[in-house]
Image (cartoon, rainbow, N blue to C red; front, side, top):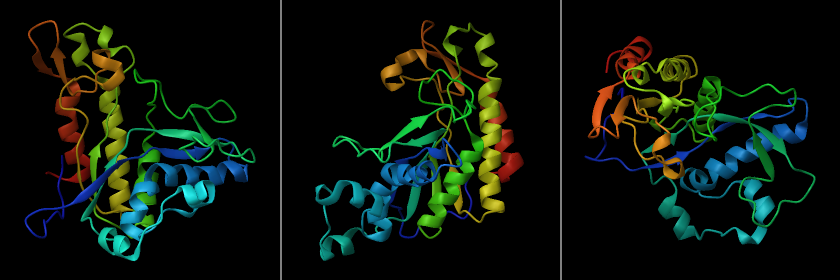
Length: 261
């Protein structure tokens, strides 16, 4: 983690943490796909952040959901608007977004009447395959999403609470070969550089970042076969921990692009 310009106001800070992926239009020349990218971000992020920063739900959600979307009383707006001190950002990857319009959205739709895909119209992948079926790294999307959040919410202080990657078939490797996780090092190298560019060139106020994860762990429905840690955990050898290449390289990457912690 790095820290800069982080000064708690009243002995503590309150923030909301939201997960968000960036989106590119599946067909860059199709206005429907271009509009769907914004809708995707609003359904994934603005659904929860807009009430806090703007006191209302996004217009795209109101248009699709109508009176199924709750309204806020004046007292509720006064209570929640501006109630947090920083924005917590979980981010891992990006997708290509394909609109389903003009077909109406199903009543159960929660994404904005669209598809999230790994390949664009021409078959170009958004990133390399990983062990996680939902994750393909795309560092430029990280920078773009930092800018989207900054611009939409009037340049809030941002804490990147999670970012990281699994590696295809990493769990099949044996010790000590598994410690050479260059794919993960490159992920952090490109993502941290993108974050530094967002700060230095775009004026995004990021005051800290935490990698996921310190150690290999139980990854939801993927269980123990998917590893995110910068430290290898030997599940069959008494849970012993061994630092991977990324454990030492990430420190140097942060220092190179962000300055010393």
